[in-house]
Amino acid sequence: MPWNRPLIIGLLVVLLAISWWRLLPDDQEIRRSQLLMGTVVEIVVGGESSDKLEAAVDAAVAEMTRLDQLLSRHHQKSDLSRLSRSDTGTEVNVETAEVITLGLDVAQRSGGAFDLTLGRLKVLWGFDRENPTVPDQVALTAALEGIGPTALSLQGQEVNKRSLQLQVDLGGIAKGYAVDRAIAVLKEHGVTSAAVNAGGDMYLLGLHSELQGRPERPWRIGIQHPRHKETLLETVQVSDRAVVTSGDYERFFEEDGVRYHHIFDPQTGLPARGCQSVTIIADSVALADALATAVFVLGPAAGLQLLTQYPTAEGLVVAADGTLHSSSGWTNYRVTP
Image (cartoon, rainbow, N blue to C red; front, side, top):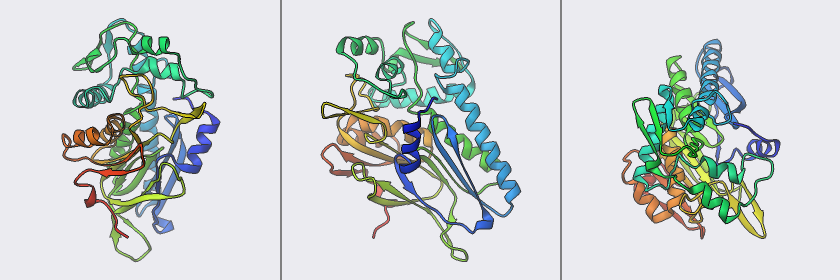
């Protein structure tokens, strides 16, 4: 996915949605940061052999790079580009089919709040360009024509789309899937303690030691305030869990005093207005990624109701008016002062 310099600078400074930290003895840590999938990806692994850890990180980065080439609409030979160019659909790789299967499930359960078929709309707004713009109503209406959960279907690895114009976009889930696969590769290489952070889409594997000689404990994650980037809303502790935040402060511009951000309501084609940010904790980053978008679009009440359909997921929502709302199990992760 393409990136631009202002966006990357912002990512480096803010790391998008989540502030996070960890400490391990220097001789047990390998840390790698680079640009992948249009964002800054940071991988931190702990263990006893630096050579083995380096090899594990190399393999994880290679896997994320492979998936970017498979799932991004910006690569002409990707599954997604082939699907968008096709008249009625095409056969895709098993990984693409897995992403679409999960995305369609969340789309159906959320009543279309999460939508894989917003490709034309996202191109229209141009948030991956240097200067995004507000489209006129005629263009918005055209971009929304024929979209929705029933516009796309999957049988095995054969993806079918309802119309020629339909453009699929996996931006709300593919990055999370890539993080999940990176974690799987690290596990295959024997890594038992790691953190993979792709612009706020995170998975925390195992436990870590705060200081040398002290007992291991769950990872502690600070959730950024959506209006005050130097302030933490809350701190949570997790182990073997995904943490994803979506917010209206990640990618936005202002025009005539109005903030326009990149999380769209499929009903209107405009930025969703019910929330400032949503943080999801779940057992996979891909699921947390999709649910964060769906909950953001639905708003606090309907969004938290959606989470009851996913027993492994919990959420913290900052509503448009700044009030906090959380699912019933969120307290299991909250670190009290």
